[in-house]
Image (cartoon, rainbow, N blue to C red; front, side, top):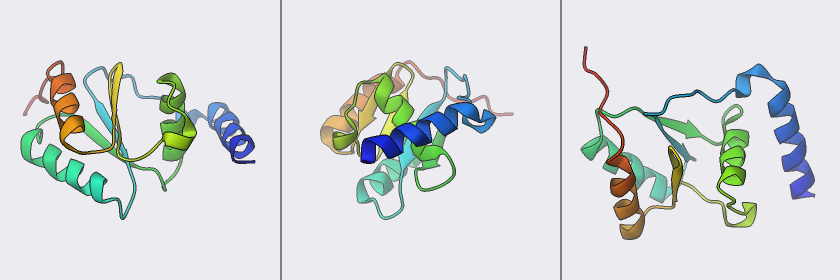
Length: 119
């Protein structure tokens, strides 16, 4: 039943224009949710060390953000049963969860991103 519901939502998402992915090669997407301690820690870490980077946070409980996260999960072949937040998309890579290993991965992938231009 869960799978059918996800497929229906995905189908509806593809039919609407609001579900178009932004094509920014220098943008990091962070899928999170309220009450998630790991999400809060990831946010604080990024604010401290990557404040000048193009990082877009998406609350999965708002709008079509959950369907966006599910699309990325399918792209990276992450089973829905194991999908969790934060789910961070860094170009062709992703980091799921937040702890010492994820921080190392995140820092490694962030090397290919550049800070935003300050105007």
